[in-house]
Length: 204
Image (spheres, one colour):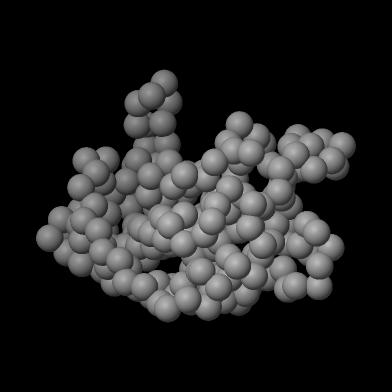
C-alpha cells in the first residue's frame, strides 16, 4: 500500500496558481496512479459509520510558517503576490498576481494541511490510506480535507484500503486549524475547518 508520508498531490505548498484546483477536491492521492475525481462513499467495509465530510473531533491547532520561496514576489504598489502562472520548457512564460490576503489564505491552508497530516501520522497506529489537502466545501467554505482512501483498479477491484477505521481518523483529526503565514515582512492569519471523508479513487 503506498505511503502517505507527508505527501500532497501538489508538491510543497499549494500556490495561488493552483488555487482553482482546491475547489475541485482534496489534493492527496495514491502515488503512481491517475485517480478519477474523488467521490464520497460509504466506508469500504460496508459499515453504518458516517462517511463524511465530518468535522474532526480533536482539539483545534495553531500553526505558523515563514514562506521564503524565491518564486514569489511581493508587489507593494498594489499589495499583491506575483507567482509563476505558466511554464514552457522549464522556464516561466507567464506570471500572475493575487491579492496578498487571498494568497495567504491558500498558502495558510496548505501549511495547515501538512501539519494535520503530520499529527495524524503520529497519532494513528498507521497513516496508510490517509491523505490531506485543501478543498472548498459545499457552501464555499475553504478548509482542510482529510481523506480516508480506498483505491480501486480499472475493473473496480480493491487495490488498497485504509489501515485504520474511519471513526479513529475522525477522533484524531483536529476540528479546526489557525494558520499564520509570514512573507516579505507581512503576515496573514486565517482559520480553517477540518473535515474527514471516506473516498474511493479509481485507476484509469
